[in-house]
Length: 373
Image (cartoon, rainbow, N blue to C red; front, side):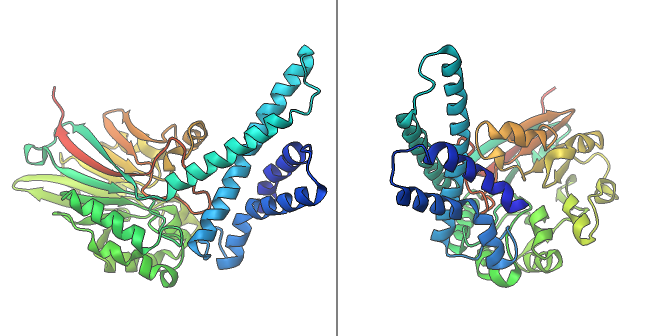
């Protein structure tokens, strides 16, 4: 059923865009078959690795499949709009019955050019985004404290070791006080990704590198990955917290598990457990891969929540739908009661839909300041 659903845009494009074109039947058949291959990129991933989440093809082939898949998806949307326009023209009696061949060429060209741009924007080293966040009762010792926020790296055949090294170097150049990672570090098994993640060992911050798991860690072998990431120098916060101290002042960094834990019999997110024993009055920075439960965190007195998961919605317009599935949160800063929520667009992106249009990937430098008033 999963793969049939992704065949529907292909079928619509073939029926409404391709078949009306004045081409030879052999050319139409060839193009239809190429597009069918692209529409089933998730099936090929499943056949290559047993999972739609970790394609084990060479990187150029993954890029090509994402371009085809993205082009088909965009063209299906454009063709629906074109059909609606033709229907309106027919009702108005102004040429709706014409084949509109030139319009079909135009929307196909635009769709596949946009898909190429989208894939190119998705797979590059992320841009630096600087954010300042004011926190009530932030101790003076932490005024100006800097965090590098990474999330959704999705290290895979699409994001290989060279990409990871570039991200690590970019993060380290910022000389942050703390590096925080909110899950979905990988796609694939430890055996297949060992070389790809090795560069993460080089991440360096004054107060360390801290990690909370995302849903893809549970899909890829949770226990093995938590142990391996810890061996690379990351400290895992799974319903747990740590205390960062500056003289007599303290800052709490807490991390939650992900709701996907249910599927593999692991502990579900437990904010009470994560904060149990934390020093009273100390500001809390919470790592939660998914932003949907931010209101609960705000009610529990969290000062700042960092999340990912949404990839910023990937495409302008689509982000509104993604927001609906994540409590209304999709990208950037939000005020949730007295808490600040920052939803990172993602450092990388899932290789099953590597497309970004207007929602760029990011490496985020967050500077904490004392709220005035």
